[in-house]
Image (cartoon, rainbow, N blue to C red):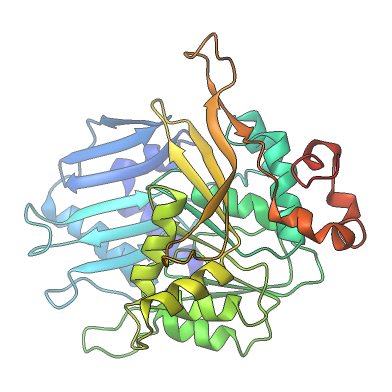
Length: 372
């Protein structure tokens, strides 16, 4: 593979037509539909640009240069490829026949700024009370899933929450394509590998997960759960790896559990549905749901605790925080993440919380824990 320095120089040369967007901190995504059709997402809005590559040959050369650094290539046998830029920005390439109108590229930019949790409070993504609750949950080794749609802020929130993990704990991160910027030092980062054109060298998320269990992790974090590795994660969560976290695409906390169930069924292990649901309910303690609102504002819309499955075999959830108007007389006022009045199951651990985790039991969350 070429050196990092050489890669930086060649990328700047080949991607010159879009370099201004890659350098613009306000641009979060560059979407190239064709060599002469380029869109960007800036400040939460998608707009078409006047930028274009000189010709199709220059466009394909740029793509091949990006893929070359990560040892990947685009071919008829491999029409869909993930890669990254020198700064870590994620790149996805789709070519014909999958992309019917020609080769398309999406570049999700790698933020140079790590948004800490207090900054997310300033942006209105989360409230101080919800921050305190999640900090306690992380320190109490609750297993947590952060769910939401594309570009809803899941990765940013996971990065921010990682700062609450004690420094003496060993973290193993598993990703399909490296994106996370966890704010910890004792960390091992594993990344999946795609097969070459001959089908050799593939390393899947499931294989990485099994390897991670041999690396003595205190916590396992999966960048995005998307397949049969869901069952491995569930089983790890129920066998001593508390405080594990991951993200996935889902429309609500209830949908998160259903999607996790569906993905677990993709594994070769067949479990009765009730047994699978019972394992999921036992494994996952918290679901944090996020969404992207009009104008690009990314917010936490719901924080829900997972109870046991009921007698009918259905998941039961307890909403601790929900997004709602904080002024009933002015429903048009900006929505706020608000405590529902429900007591958290963490309150049942009162003795241990008032001991080992006493420093994280702040006054704003004492009512949530039933410690008034």
